[in-house]
Image 1 (cartoon, rainbow, N blue to C red):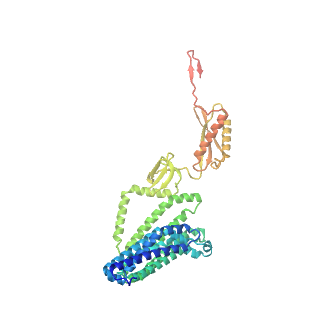
Image 2: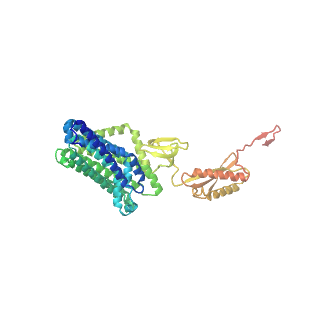
Image 3: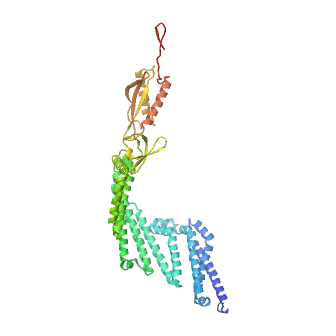
Length: 515
């Protein structure tokens, strides 16, 4: 029919528009049918979303693509003119690419659901293929978006030669998919549990992570090199030609960073292994206390050395930098003597293990639980919830209530109408009952030790006794003992001794009476 009608610009535009509409309809219908072919268990919801919502976006994609292709036809170029036809075709191709990108982002999850869901028999018998398909389903939209971006770039720079640009874009997309599959397989191999000696397990785990990261980096570098070769460029040729000097500096910088990273991993692992090698409870406390400080010092030292080496490899003269750093360090040393005193005192306190995280301590009148340590301060929280921050240089003595054991000490005033021996027997009975109490027996490490009459106050004998207890449990044991003793006295009809006063009255006849 096209050739039977007289040639005119209106007829050509009408035929192009009709062609675009028909192609868009056919393209969207074919895509929906292709989605339906993938129907299976656990895929119905994804297919429902695609059938209901994907037809119109696919129609726009097909229509714009067909419109751009039709405008590139030589007859349309002759009718519209080269510049107008090229501009309209470029606009249509750009709209098709943008519509494709929007479609990918909007429907990435349903399509990933279609790709990933496989029959159970395939997942059990062909694990390698299943893992590969899982990786492709998870990251399918990334190469698709890259292809869209490359096609946009090619549309603007190809000056109308879109076929070559499209072939190059497709090849780059294939390389990207291959790179992602290889990285997925490397990641899958890295997640496999490896058997080894427990002593070196931490070293093996961190070194394995380090080398697998280098493997991922190598795969991406290979992809970049191959992708550039597709477009007629190459990193290797650049390093061998005009960019030789720049590439040498960049390689030396990268090598310095990788070597510093390896040194950091080895030193951090060695510190962790050394601090967690002793008894479990003590090791955890020491690790929580010293690990942040030592790691910070190591990190700063490695960072400074790596920075200086990297600057030297880049061609910078670091001698003035080192001299300036020395002068600044000397000035800081003289101007911040209290800071230096805090650092040195704190270092020795931590090395000697005088206090640790979660210890209950008394440092110069500040009583509380150690919540944190920095390189110059210790942070305590007292029983009222108030946080105290004390510089190490102000700590003259440390009373640590959390080490090894404690003593719950009792001072009991004996009632006047009670014999000392009866009071001792009553206290022993209370102590024995507490040792069989399921809530307290773990905290009490010894029988009740009666230490005798300590003193006399207001005419009453003060009987002293004590329990050996678990660390920090002495106050809890004391409160429980006092409560139990008070209940026993109440049951016996006795009361604790109260202050007693004697008054002597002298009468007029010279006699004396006591009240």
